[in-house]
Length: 270
Ligand SMILES: Nc1ncnc2c1ncn2[C@@H]1O[C@H](COP(=O)(O)OP(=O)(O)O)[C@@H](O)[C@H]1O
Ligand SMILES: [Mg+2]
Image 1: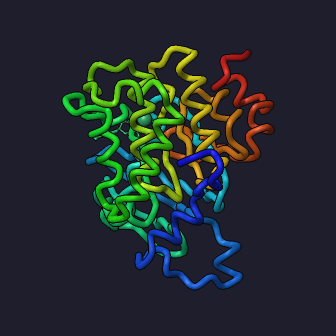
Image 2: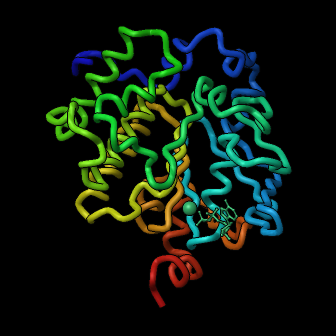
């Protein structure tokens, strides 16, 4: 995609996706005001372990929201539940005006709900290009896929140079970029990111968060999960804090950055 073209944001993507029931919701004024994603009293258990114990949150269309919390708080479980990846979630999950509890992952991806999982989910024995292509597997619009791929390589020159290299040979940060590029090829309307900064060197963390900003600036709604609370609060407008499976605090990210409890528990300040 050349620089003279307008950015193809999420709304265009949603239009072009066409014919998908997820997007065929009548645009009444009530629907326009409703959040894009809403969790209502979500519960998830693994056998006897209650990982999520009644979590409610909402993400508006075009909003950038973070969910922070310590290791084991239930963040990944909550994200996996949104994506239809945990059995027997209780409560309700509403996306684009429709309950999606129990929906299949691939249907959700077609509807624009796309996750970059914890640990990135890269195929080490496939090339960078092949890994990216996985993101486009539900798409039929080959010409648009090729344009999106060009654009991703423009955004990530390091990946372009090595497009035929095996992804397993890349650094953690480069693999994170591949995972985010793959998600972008799915034309997300809502992008769910699970700990993109995990295990990365500081410079790579910056690069990854720059990409989060770029994606969001094109109209993609972002729900970011992070243990790195400071960074997460700096790139989002609103945040939720999760502890032992519950949402214990929420508010504008700026306010959370200055909240004494957040500072003590998550920003390493006394
Ligand atoms: N597949 C699983 N089977 C059993 N317990 C799990 C599984 N995944 C996570 N848990 C448990 O659920 C709780 C929440 O984990 P998780 O959602 O991964 O937290 P976070 O992402 O905030 O670190 C933890 O106690 C964890 O040990
Ligand atoms: Mg996790």
